[in-house]
Image 1: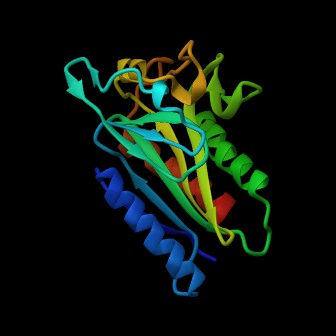
Image 2 (image 1 turned 90 degrees about the vertical axis):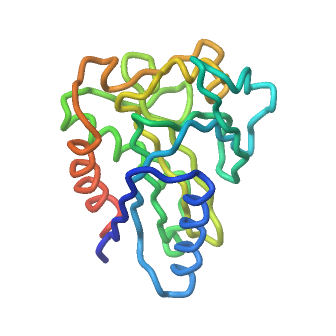
Image 3 (image 1 turned 180 degrees about the vertical axis):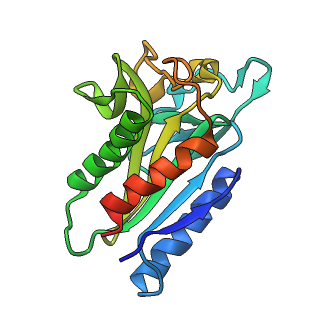
Length: 206
């Protein structure tokens, strides 16, 4: 089963949700296969099902007004914005029915990608996601509808890390967030995408 890949330079968050929902329904109807969407969003704070309103500290950081959007994915509050590569995986789990394993594979996707880019990363007892030197470099959140999962993982390539100061990211008040650029890896989204696609095909296209 080949992994379908869709790429958007940038996409409004609501439009992205609509696209994912459409693919979920198409998979249920037998009209689509596992899909990877690569995109980015204008600055937005997204609230997962465990989020608290008070974890949004301010909507204005560095003169930028940041939108707030409730979403049905798991997890708490996170930030999306320019300089991130957001990887949405819409995956049919109706045979495996193992959500925990799916999340592990999303984390592995980022670990493998970062290793190829020269950065050693891993998981942490602090929470779901991918971490480098005690700081989170990729956030993971998913939603499952009748065993078709969507949402995915956001990798910080070179976002404005100060924008995370407007929230309590994933419930962590010490805000341990980093990026490829902050860790000394100078690269671009255009260079990262082919690496992500290759590893995603290995993990989700079989």
